[in-house]
Length: 371
Image (cartoon, rainbow, N blue to C red):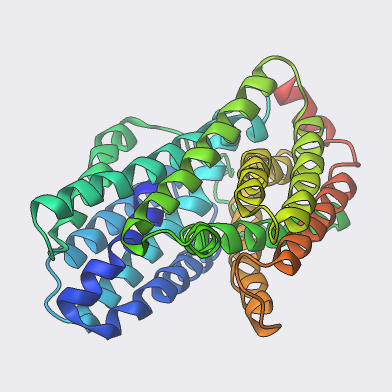
């Protein structure tokens, strides 16, 4: 998933020079494919082996990236990005369910560890692609590298035997809409919006503020994902040491909001300091996604987990589109003080929603299973 998330944006400049301007539509198509994959997973009956969904999603990501590597026109490249996005969506919605069923204590703890791996892969992939394009200038065949990364996961998935315990024959689980789940879904939407603003402009912000050569843009993406990996690894360590998911997220969101306010204050007079503050905010926010999704799944029975996971991830996909569009709609530059203040306010909203969503106790059956 990490390789797919970062590889398509990373090769867009090369693809544009090789295939033409039309390839820029590949980025939104990757996102739309993700949303389509999530919606498809929500329609699957609960009797479907969830590991098969993960396997199918992984294979679609591999196929999409491989097709992109050998694209001969913008239309083919865009279609390849959409196909990879569908696989991404299937994998993302199903992997949370697998984490829930295999977690010894809490899905939030398991997902925090898994998302650390995703961030690490997303950090390293652009660097590997950059090195490969140096060996073959102007070629997008380097997309075979992330395709191979996805392919390597297939044998491990074939050995995984986690199934949804749905009973036989199980009717389709209805999505139980409760106030805590609505609050957590809204928190995911706002958080993914924050992440989309920072990750989508992870190269534009530093190069805008420091006036660096844009040919080094790939470094911005890798630095962002490196910070995400650091933040998630630190959170995973805190959780293993006995911290609760709620306390970990509260600490991170508070620190992120303070750092973003400081970035807004210093961006005009000391842009380098503002970038350091932004980096601190990225590290602090990094574990939010896994903790919020895991918290929602911890409050859901196994049969309803696939639909809850898909619904919450779909909310995140919507937020990932709306907040960046809102920033652009008010005419703000990616690195403006108002953008940073907006993100700080969004962090407070996320924290408030998570505190509301996690205030209720876990059902008795879930407490017995997770100790």
